[in-house]
Image 1 (cartoon, one colour):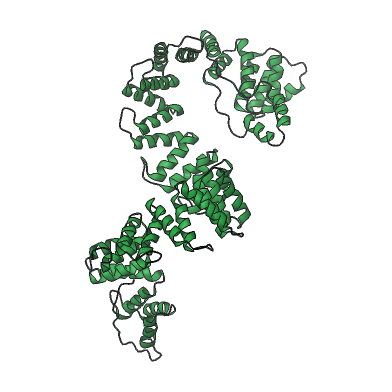
Image 2 (tube, helix red, strand yellow):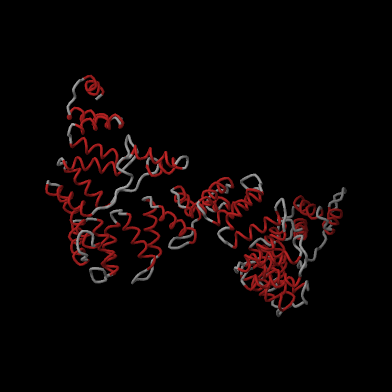
Length: 617
């Protein structure tokens, strides 16, 4: 091949065929720039094959920036010279429009990037590089013309495409009177030959009843036939069909399978959707890792909401290893695209110095931008910056909280309660604090419900009212608030505000303990060890005491010290007993300190001492 190229270079007076052969040889070696030059020389001498090859290079972006308009211009030259494949490709472009531009070589993206520096110069350069423009509009009349020419020249697949073009003309009324029934008949002809776009069109027409009687079963059949051929639009339409369940029960499992197929074929919206389905367990078992994987893929293709979601995954370590730096980068991508929630999160990260150096100025810039969208969450976050930033401004914070609260945003109402109750440097207004706490609580804000319960329980700013406290603790407890669950259990234990009920106390201690509430773990351990409100279970009690002790609760550490010293439920282990006694004693627990002195003196005495457990309040 190299010898052939050397011969071409040394031969004067090439004709069209020689230049074309040289271009083909260069293509085989991947030397597309040289191939383009050779094909242009041959095309200028009237070689139709060379014109067609130039079109192929532009269509594929080989040796040039991809440009379907330039590809069409070259295809047209070849087609007018009788080149059958060029006629066919030209017909397809006019029928279906150009395929999606691929990212790095897309002239639209190149122009967009260049225009950021100098719009006028970029456009002038683009006009020089792409004299035929950047886009190609569909043209059914031209498509039909060229496809029929290719079919008449002996390309049978062109005949099927010509039928599709004619059907589209009848369906849309472009170039022919609108005639949906005739369009359906023509699509049926093409569908018999397995033409996937005709199958899709018939499926949609059967769904809508346009041109044919509405027939859900036939619609599903047509869409499935096209989807089995991995035709992306058909896969997506079928997924939407199963999601919405028109005429049939929705089937999220089937929809999820189809969205996953579409995602694997590169459809960015499907990648985002399957990510959401994995995140919420819709049609598939919840799988944070799969959710993060698909959010990342969609984000890498420019899906802004997916960028926010993968940022959240990195920030929380959900489905991926926690990475504040990656979180910041993806939040920035989403924030720059106008996603308000991402702007708010960036503001919070800069305020906290998480993943980025702490910078209240940058935090303020992002939060101010988010506030421009009138978003109440943004206003609340900006208000907190005015309370906790380098230059506190409580009055401005109050204004922002009020604006957000008046929009019905419960967290803002909660923060107003905190502001007026004296949690920040601001004049105390107990009546206003109670009013805003109640507004937030009535809106379902669990922290506000818990706070209101504590106010009534401890008579802070209101008259003591155990029954009212129990009402608010119960509401917060049902919202999985561990503190409220603990307090509600305590009230059942003591019969305070509710009838005494040790079984219910155990139930709510279980919920709080399961969330890691150490006092709930301790109190539940005491009840389980004694069989109060439940069956006694010493092994379970010991496990709960251990959980509380490992979280630093001195009373639980003292219990474990006794257990290991006495061999109560565990093998006797003086070393472990001493370790737990010491841990409790370092926190000032008098019983543990006495135990160390009594049972671990220098003379090694070890007389056992009983310890009587009592619930912790």
